Image (cartoon, rainbow over all chains, first blue to last red):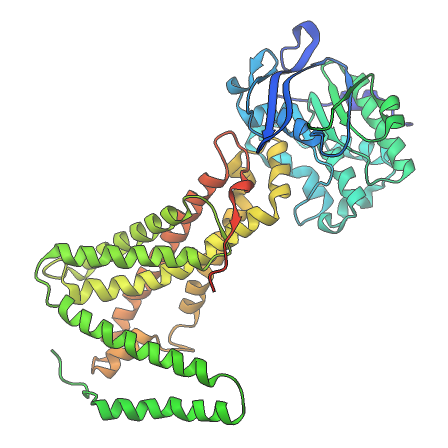
Length: 237
Length: 269
């Protein structure tokens, strides 16, 4: 895309950046997940390094979404642990952890209100009270996904699935996370916007150290474009 | 007892019943299908009230506080259970949450009125405590069930909106706050609406009763004002209490939404 990656680097996060010594942003150790009698995975280990673009694929029902939600601490750990910035999950304040490790759902639901209100909402949370809303970044991001300024005045609750996905993506980028957990982030988008989002996210990674993403998809060609390591989940036994 | 009012004989009651029988006849004639329901409801009303009359007669003669407290506890527990029965969903512990808040709110407010405002003697005088408690409970019951139902429906339907906030670093309180506001408003609306139009559109039942019993209108109004403040305070306390308890059950300390704890109620009717 035409937007220079440097503009994305100008994100300010007043929460000090996590300790990224040995280049490790997030580590999952020995995760297990059972749903009733079914074991989705056992003894699962995963390390996400600085600058890494990890792809996750696997058949439907193999637990891709569940894995991302677990990494985002939206699901309780049934066993094992998550380590971020040298601290185990239990040592983190969960909101602070989720400010660094942000999950973007496949079918985001937005509150009633304008798109702008949706983008600003996370800056109303106590966690970011001291943080100014990055107005300048919004227009850069809109441009990158081929939307003009009128987009932010639309009603969020009336957006199509694809447009809601764009809003959720932009909102996740605005809060300046370290790790993005992207659940089929381009599933409902047209080809041109898919490419724009792919480019935007790859620029986001390369613009600044201390960033990584996990991207789930069924699209092997896409994963080849946007990731540099691929993990395949087996369908549950 | 005050004898300014006209005592009703059984024949006068029968005459009143004729009023409803006329409606039953009209319903049968026009095949409106309401006749049976009207008859059942009327019969239930008569039987229930006659029973309550007998019970209250003996309750009002109680000379010790413990049985009065016991009756209050049973009334509150029944109201707490009934409040949950009117909702569409359940979670483990919902009955406890409801009974505890209904009991707490009703006892605090009725206690304050009886001990602090009316200063009745003896302090448990059943002639005051039981009717006041009943009036307060009826209103808490509807407030609690409306608020609880709204809250559980909100959690069930807007789980992904709430989780979007959580995923972006909201605390559980921040993520639930819009829904909590909405639930409290839903629970309070009937009480607020009835205060808005009180005396203009309708004369409250208790006031009507006092007027028929020969009380001066200005005195009846004073009682009604106190009752309305009690009802509003108790309903606010009850809805807030039950929503906070439900919030703690459905959002855990790790700021996770536990929507899977909600289940649809089995229809009993």
